[in-house]
Length: 462
Image 1 (cartoon, rainbow, N blue to C red):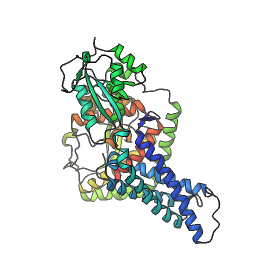
Image 2: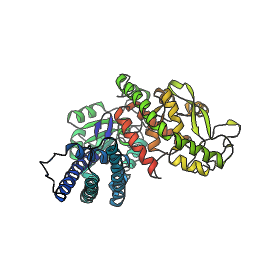
Image 3: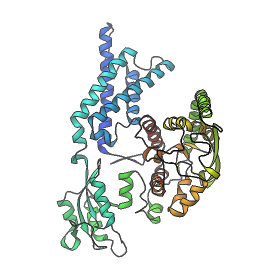
Image 4: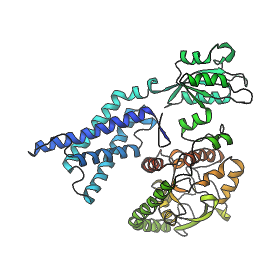
């Protein structure tokens, strides 16, 4: 994987994205030439309409990222990829139309855009038809040798066999720390030289997955493997990279303390984040006021009670604040004020509430909390104090998610559904810890773009 601003991007995704950008630039240039010949205009050298061509490619590439064109499903199914590409191209052209209205002359003409859309769609689909299987094949997967044959090693085996896995396990070595759970594992004494065995298996990475490391850490083996040029990773680091979350079942306090991340030296990033929050909140809140008022009337018309409500949530450093929302549940959803887990098909949600939740309209009043600085656009979901008190007792490191400002959308929200029980809360915490550990403005941009996928498609996480 390629690490871009602390965030891991698979090589296959990076390669395909670069090819896509080149194709989009070519489609825009070709569309310009075709239209110029039709109206008898001088074409000029390649790259003459630089700004319109670049704006077309940038708008469509961002739209493709936003709707999930580079997700696992898009690599597995050409039909799925074509559908997402069509949506992305339409969204990109709509964005370009708005840009043309605000800044005339900086984008392609409407006739050019039509030609460019058609050319781009066929080129992008053609590339996926020709390379789809290759990009998802073993050629782009890392070959991993696992040191260990217990429960942790078995998890890696299952993860490598899962759909869309970016690595394949080429073997397990039983280090004798625990009884083996993998029948095919080779006992360490049966291998004369581990470094030679790694070379023979053509492994590109060795992962340490011991259950009991005390007096069992094979330092000499690991040193020889590493000096032979093969990457060596501990299971927690490996799982963080592969899953995009901090795995609570394997992580230790020492790993969190000494691993890369949780950087405090990001003052410029924090200032930029705050400026973005204020500007974006005003740009969205002011035009959306009529929509908020109409929705409030619809909520009031359907069920008794106030259209708006305020709830106490836990924010930065564990401080409490009141969050405003449009009501999407019945007025008696929480009898006695006791906090209850939300579920996927929660019967307390009203008909209007079901719609505004899917479109995220109920979240719009929270922009006021963003303006006040109590929240950010991107960050862990702020939870109720009652939930937080319980979860801090049952889940390790839960308090660490409050070391960053809570957000309207976040890494956990786009990757996992509503937390309906303790196991769901654990999964969401793993994503929240990944965000807190690896925060950069680039990751914020990825999350903001991917939020469109969540809103547009029903299978998106909430």
